[in-house]
Length: 158
Image 1 (cartoon, rainbow, N blue to C red):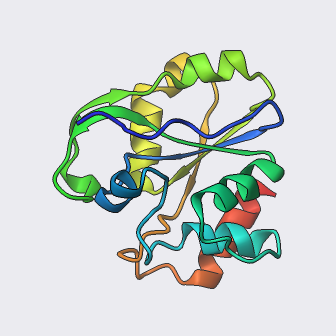
Image 2 (tube, one colour):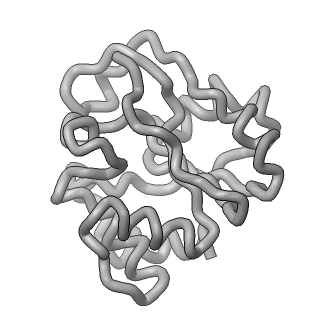
């Protein structure tokens, strides 16, 4: 399956946040972290003391206004549903190329253990930037509370 969502960045981006691969819901709506139960957008809004805009356009503006870029590690893979544990045949996105075109991006954060592991194995040797591993914002990650997510993301992104 091919990644259907373009990366989100601009020339003011300094931190690239990477997921593994878009969920079924994200692929349906054509934007990152599209499942309504995913905590990514509420966490980002809380970091900056803003309301979650709820629209893809508003969410893009929220990220870009704080120097954040967003993409996924994988350009394609075989996946069943949204479960990262089912990812097979991973092919990475051209993250090293993005970093060459936008040298202002000096930090990488990966949302979840699968994204971090895939980045470290498939991309980091060419990209040269290590990734900060963050807890998954997925509602399936019940062991990490919302305040714990905010604290972890604050430490990595602010």
